[in-house]
Length: 283
Image 1 (cartoon, rainbow, N blue to C red):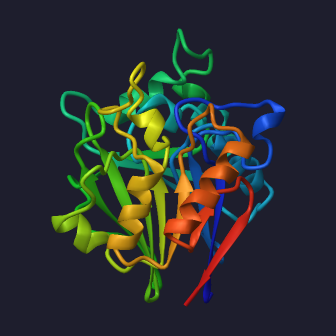
Image 2 (spheres, rainbow, N blue to C red; image 1 turned 135 degrees about the vertical axis):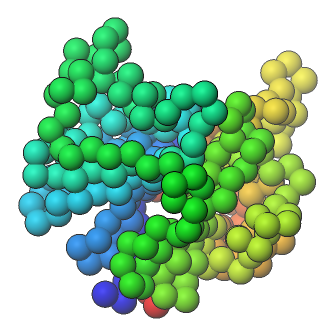
């Protein structure tokens, strides 16, 4: 197929939010679903993956799901025990992340299903579940189909173990997913080559500049970008569209719209990520 669809199922950072101030853009934590015909994959499994799973369950012909994790912080994996396809014995679920030092990342995933966090236990997982280390046993791009592949590069700054930046290549189009980064000096070197000239950049924008540099509670070193950092990278990397992402859970819909107005004055092709809104890119 000549169309790649991507849907934001979770757009928040740190923790989910649910009251009426957050209903327009969404309150779930990070999860994105990509679809090209019958081939689909998910990036990150925050609380947003719960709704993504319900959507996938309705597609009875789908028997395989690849989940690519940026890292193992709780807001990016907490939705997995509530991801219905993982309890479908006809489903094959592959989970990818980078190799951690001193432990296997599968142990962290299984801990979500074990006592004292959960009564399910790994025995309750009915899908054929497998784990793969990116950059270790898998060094090259993951091929989804002949027209669609997923590449990755490590950003080491996010506390304490770093994070993966993903690139989705669809024909000659390029989508970058760069969350949980603190790019105060901008991308450079291999990262710049990896990201440069992207059609779409989905970029961490957790803080306004004033919150980031707050005298009472600064966020410097927390591993997240400001809106201005995202705008600088979009401009410097010559990207066509910028989607702000990983919103501060304290930022209401109204505040996000104020941020968007500010951002568009600096980079006109800036958009807000919106939960359950289907976005499309064509070859």
